[in-house]
Length: 235
Ligand code: C5P
Image (cartoon, rainbow, N blue to C red; front, side, top):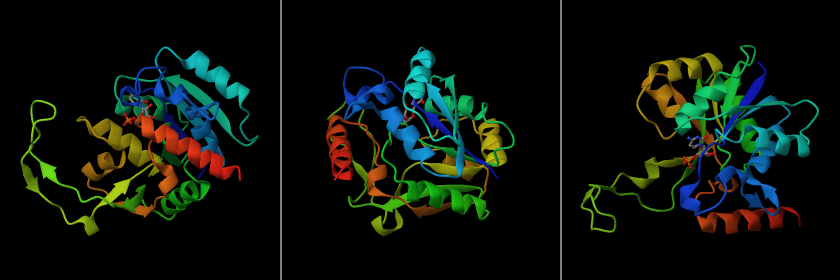
């Protein structure tokens, strides 16, 4: 089945500090979104990229994509995003024609994901998994707390899940198209990743190995790290 990639890029990026929408901020002179689109289009299996742009920015995003040529085999479309990431993904998914049996959802905020990670996700979906997530073991121990009402106040620790059983998950997350469509039709509460919607349908979600360079650019230090990774790649 042909593979389409939906790239939600409609977030403001508040945690990154003041400035342009996050996906349009430059990494070594090129907008983060362009890096992300090229990272997905680097897979020879991906033949359509749907970019979900800030609601006021589809025209700007379209001209950016026109200026940074994609491989010949890859089509792209740009659609305006929504209030939440979930809504943005649903709007992107609605723009994927039915012949695309496999859909990847990839954060614009993970611009440097290696092509081997993208291909591993696609391969696992094609092998029959309805949902696939790239995952890495944690280095930090994680505590569950009772969240404080004022920022900075001490928070009581409730539990410490066994670290060896926890994974940090990344994107692209890969899906059987019909399953992801059904998840969006069925699940109404807010989620922080797409695969959890499939979990709520009671269907299996499996992991493949993630990659350190698929980290999410969220805070100012992440920009420094992303530019260092790009500089190292040019060596
Ligand atoms: O906020 P968070 O880091 O989880 O955002 C992940 C991705 O979702 C980013 O690429 C962001 O641009 C996108 N997003 C979106 N529409 C929103 C909010 C976030 O496309 N309303």
